[in-house]
Length: 207
Image 1: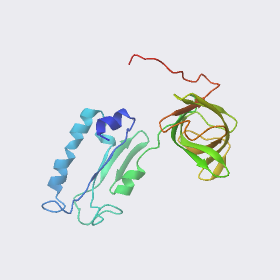
Image 2 (image 1 turned 135 degrees about the horizontal axis):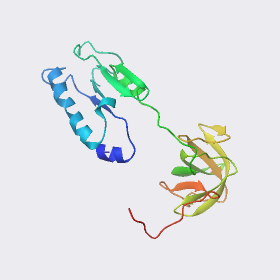
Image 3 (image 1 turned 180 degrees about the vertical axis):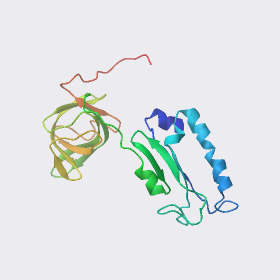
Image 4 (image 1 turned 30 degrees about the vertical axis):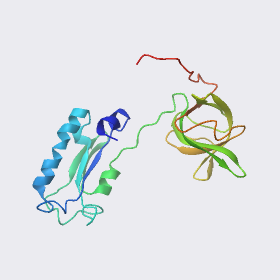
């Protein structure tokens, strides 16, 4: 995925790993790192904020900055990342990953579950699998898959083999349904609450 596509798809946080620092001439060159760092100018033009971005010099082969600060990069003092939760100063790739903020999910909108796949499981039946984007999914709910217009009742909801009383936004879950074939819905379909203003198929729209 390109950076513009990522931004338009909702990816708001970036980590850039400057890999193969051991292979450049001269190895672990601060000058080369600074040249590569100029990419932040391009990133800013796209719409990202460079102040919230980590740009980490690493070597996946030799392990530099992969787990701890490398002695081969004495000039690298880390970076300060500015978030709404405050400022942090980090030096390694795991620390950069730890700086990623969890996205805010909402339960004050209509149910939206993006379907990833549908499975047929012996002894259980048909199990659609997907991620809850907004609202909650509960056993007993009647949901409709759009745009295929297939309506079913949710019998049970599971995540990592654990039965849930409800699935919250961000949860990747499987839910057991009856009277539905694995061919009735597909990856990319959306499950919505049938009783709460479900979306309708349209002949066209104005963007």
